[in-house]
Image 1 (cartoon, rainbow, N blue to C red):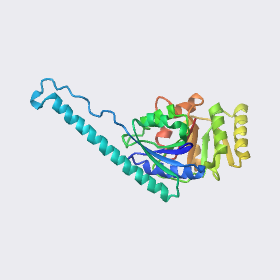
Image 2 (spheres, one colour):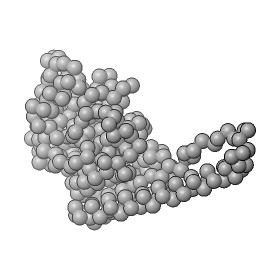
Image 3 (cartoon, rainbow, N blue to C red):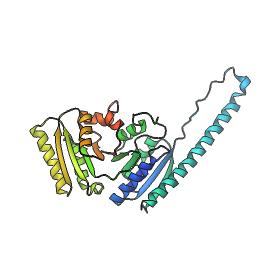
Length: 284
């Protein structure tokens, strides 16, 4: 399944968005699509201290019952995963995807994705997973770990699909960001979309030169491209630009200058990504 779009699904409210964005990406990239569901078989119930509680039954008997409960839980999780995969496959097929593969794997999500990353062209994941508190604004811990450990582009998606027409790239002139512009220029994902390049910083000769380079790369590839240099705090500046230009996808490098890096993988997740209702393509 080399160079596939890989979509990680679970029973969270983001899974329909994952399915729809993955189908869109697979069609745009002319790439096969795989859905993957992981079943974490790590022990969920801690072994109890039964000293002095023989009235409740022998220790061995209780542990045997606990083991049976865990085994039943694993069976239910696998069956639920198969139903989710079947539903995802049907949804993608209805969207016109013919080359489909459904995978169910035992293990943690992050370890499973890292093991498969050599075969992945693009990873599509939801903003939060089924175990995350839905009222929380924080990104799921799994997603933060995936961003840190994966070396493939990652598309973090919201609950509902919107066809991207205005794409914004936060650009800081770093090697990762320059590679990101080159990837953006070459990618069929953004054919027909307007590409916005935004530098958050001072209006210096260096920043003007960096912006001119980025716009030239995009325009030479046939894209409509616009750019801006804006002073201010990173997340607030990007959020304002997004609102002013009806941006419907954000493209960022996972590593770059410190302020941009903090926006994605800092010690605390910032307001912009926590509240993002638009997809974010994270480049590596």
